[in-house]
Length: 299
Image (cartoon, rainbow, N blue to C red):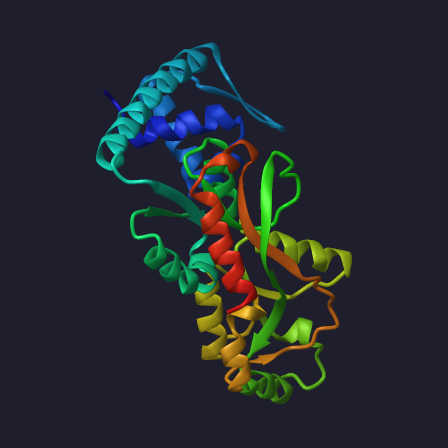
């Protein structure tokens, strides 16, 4: 084999999605890294695998042949993994849960301990992924339930609202004082450094859409890939961060952070549990949902 397995998996995902940006989002790597891997694979095999168009990529005849072989190969690997997992866990009921690291930390872990203590016979498996990847895993039935920010267009999923969240901008009081001293006449949107999640994040896409609706632009943007880092950077005084209010309530209460008014309307959003409608019959899901939703409503 001229290439390692990861190169063929990247090729397989690009062929499956027909789009480099979609493949990058699902693989959690950058588009340039995808392009380099495909280019290297083409060079080493001395063939052209894709035709590039403005709408994405399409497989060449040689690419189609290789794609079919990779489909067969990864299908066999998946069957092997599933067989091993089944053998290891067949004596124990299990529930497979997916969520982002942010939602696991701030929304799920405080109540997961109670569920585990009341259902010690159930094994809980956590898959830490983005909302998009969590939905993808649900679609492929690799997880039973996902904790996500409610997206649009999920008619074939059941969604159980859990918590309403509010996106706000925060900074340290000292950072705002420094801005007033250094840039007394400049609008905040021009003078400040605004820290946002990266563009592939569903929260960032929501905030960008609201900014566009309000014709609101920032001059200086610093992109960060996790909510934890946004909060830490704001606490350090590096700028104004867009965070979820419910996740920084303690810092707001003690004055470590303050909410920055921007005359920008950001309607509240919902997070909740999603599962495929045909998966609602899973006998483990109902007590799991009742346990978590009940305790969020009555913490």
